Image (cartoon, rainbow, N blue to C red; front, side, top):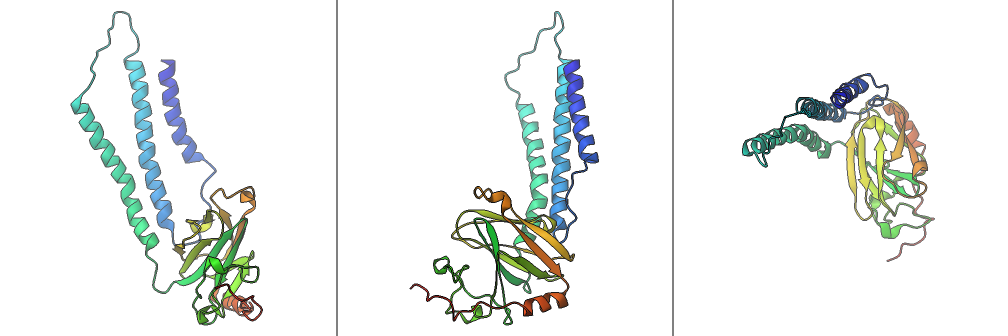
Length: 268
């Protein structure tokens, strides 16, 4: 009886704790409320299964407890039970996966008018590259990285001549404009994560991954690395500053594009 009561308290206590918990998400500041909705749906489906299983265990512990003269029934297999378990499990898994598939399709479908912004991770800082007046990012290559060219921008691509490089500084973005973040790493795996944006993606050496989001609230938001990347991982933080369009343009015009004239010749 005591074990059955403990199991019931575990089920009820878990639900009450999550309903009354003060630890919840930070206020969202992008268009990705879909992700919150998907997580909540998954939580309630998984939570309902958890409660049902624990309560069933409590029932079994009490209902089939030891009693003098009672003999256990031995049934090595039950095709009917296995069939029902397979069907119920399959429906439950499909119910959790289906919303995520719709959100994932939106997550990888970038709007045509999105602005490309490059995010580069390295032990242990964030660097950024924004398009200049031409609105386009120039080509880049990890083999071109040098002290004078920290992001490996190609000198031969005219589109990169006016790119703005922010090394270890703040990433400024305009509010209400879709942003496509091109993610690169120059050493190990990092993960670009802005909790308020609900945007999160790995940076893998040797490839360019991406995420997109639309900032919906002005303010200053912290960038975290959500992948263990070495001893300096906890200190790998950055800042996103979301501004009104006029303020963003004023900030952008005040930035100096990379000076290719002073850059060392690229290796060929």
